[in-house]
Length: 430
Image (cartoon, rainbow, N blue to C red; front, top):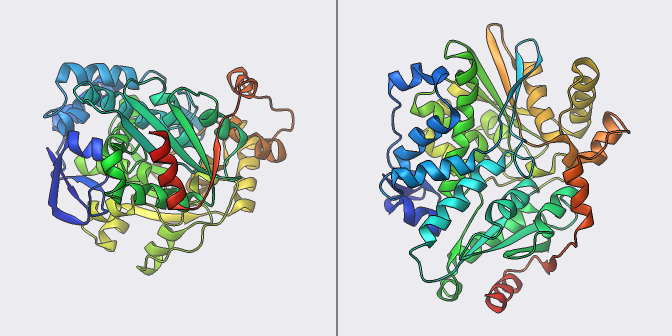
């Protein structure tokens, strides 16, 4: 299996090269040259399989040429180390809880798989690799945890100053070791732009061997498709599952779309957005028109130029009508998000964070007769305790493992939204 650039289908790389380089040199994103079709017998047997077995089978279709199957088995076992329960919230609406990992966010899955895959590739390399990653919230903590003390790998995390929660900031600034955090005077899109500039800077790449742990990296993106199989494992393939996905950089939902293209019988998707609604507006007008990023209480979704839109468009042959056949858009501002959180808590006795609540609200409005709604619980509510106290219960307490984060020393360095400043930092440090 090779991977081509979404900017140039003739620009192709192996799985290994795609993972290590992260971005093609033409600024596109890597995409599989073939979308494998899942065997019908495999699909019919999902209720008899474990998540490890499913992950091993699906991911081997993309990586077999570069990762021995025995090694892939080990990577998968060490990635999916936590439960992913499907929890009933109300009649015909379920939450796929993706927040039971080390940093209580769905990104633990992709970050752990990528970290272990890169560590395997590094075993035969003679130069250390520097992971450069931008975060709007949860990616930073997941990457820090996934790559902590991985041999031959240094990590630099860029996060927007004042635009992540205290817990999110602590998760990426208290580990030390090979984990370094830069607090950028800007928003997430600024951080993401800086990262992309670094990858395309040929002069910098003479000094450093760079790779990314954002969902722009194929090994962060692909394993996220695996948890879409969980409802089918538990309830079979006869349900009309509608997946409502909180969307920021659109890596999560496009992973699900990939699973559907491979044959997983997902009925349809809802792309649930906050006020940064560039993709829902595109669905309505056919025009991709990014606005300035708006800061919201669902901060991990505060993205106005989602990188993975390129993969979404490629999945559907750059045809809007093809996209709309599978997907609809939904938007909800902060006031509506608070209202949904409060209603869910009081009516269902179920706590949801500001991101997941937008996806839940979409199902409440858009689910049709005969469908079963599944919204992705992308982060534990305790990561957004200021909002939870305001909206649901002022007496909610932090989990013990979160409290311990505030006992550790916070270490980060402030930089301006300046590529030259980032470049100087990287050259000086590495």
